[in-house]
Length: 350
Image 1 (cartoon, rainbow, N blue to C red):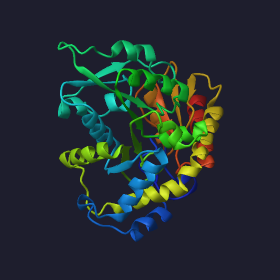
Image 2 (cartoon, rainbow, N blue to C red):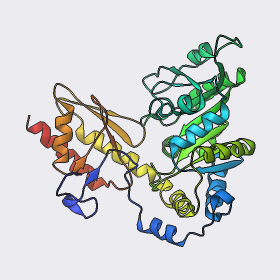
Image 3 (cartoon, rainbow, N blue to C red):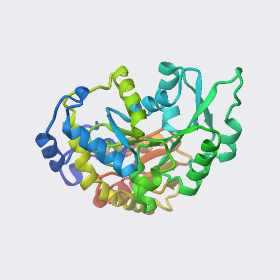
């Protein structure tokens, strides 16, 4: 952390962290919900708050059952290993989290092969590419079992008709379908539809609580009851069985009631930040559909901009040449103005 700035506090002495929406701090109401949560031993199936959250999320997604997972990575991994046996294959986008950013867990731990397809400019994959990638039942090939998609993708919403077309290809070939819906809450907000509408084409969905919803941890894996029973065994095998984790589930229930309805504010702040930076000579701004935008310095070192903003108590991050900025519940509209001023001051000085 940059010295001299604080994560708490107010005004210009407060650190603004745009690296991710995972950096949020629990609100006072969420901390109270944690303190008041009724808990039990979840490995024994005795934590009432966890059971309430699992049922709530599964119901919102139109699925039979849910399973609280410590992380989204473990949630996706358990899903992949439940859908696919050793020597089988899943089809996925080559920039999707379940392929690129989860340390190859399905391959390393499950002997499951990924067939990674290129993305279009909106973060989607082509149904024709999916069709062409499904292997015949031939001993030379891994058996294709699953289509794994993502929504949102780097802040870009995947449109429902496109998702339907992809899932139709999968169904026509007898494949299961899984959605990495880490930010499904943002997708639903941007599309103006309920969660079940987005989840409907998929057999299983992983939804993250610690990103847009602002909880300290956990995801929920939802799907058919028999699938969830199998995934529960895998969760234990992967070290994800927790005890009195109802204190975390209470955060999820609180967030669904209080944080989910306000996600549109983050989307508006992302658009306001993009508008405030528009027209700066030497900076390309790429804004998505939800709470993310990417800054692409042209003709100068991206790290210089990162360092300049850190000196003003503003953290941004991501792989060059595009630097990710993620708006979230701990970033106000006033903070957006401060970020605009900080970026503009950098370009005024070069």
